[in-house]
Length: 272
Image 1 (cartoon, rainbow, N blue to C red):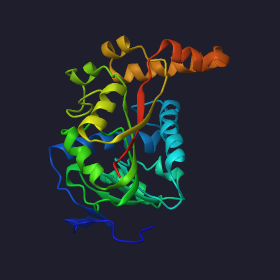
Image 2 (cartoon, rainbow, N blue to C red):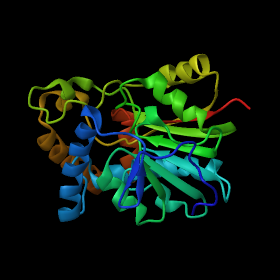
Image 3 (tube, one colour):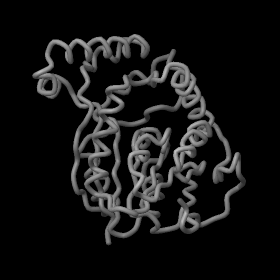
């Protein structure tokens, strides 16, 4: 649904009806390779090769619960890094927009009724103070300039509007430095609740409303450092299946007691 023109500038062009506001460069090409590898497996096997489906759903559920809490019917919402549109697909009552730097993702997501564009965050194309809500999940760990990215995101959020961010929680980044890791730019930083609150309240003068951790998959950090990604994914699937089968009554309690959360959601309010 496109009630009014959401863009503050003319696109550089269109591809299959999708406007683009950024040219391809080393960064977008790196991400395009990641998304192509993801979709090659997803279209063939119906799964994400980088994360176990149950965990993916659990993480999405954690953000969707917060979005349910803060969204009002008819709100304009932007998902920065919309991916396959799985999060926004749950919220048909909202006026939904998504941006990404993967053409394959955008072509897929547009079919779900979400208004999409191709743009890097640095080239944010939307009008100032346009959105009631913005979600940004699995994105900020990737960007080259974190402060610039957040400046651009907050510019298009209405005063008093809500930003919901989900990022990895205290992640060990050693995996991404391994010589055989297939991508140059993946996760470039890690986060915790204290650093996020300081960032949003001290640097951007926003109100920090709440934070929630999510994704308590059986995932000892030491194994993740020394094992290749494919083997790591298989081990976590086995551990998760075993725990759910034999420890079902206590599954959530065991995970919360023994393992770190994988992600953290934070909810931010822009100054009015």
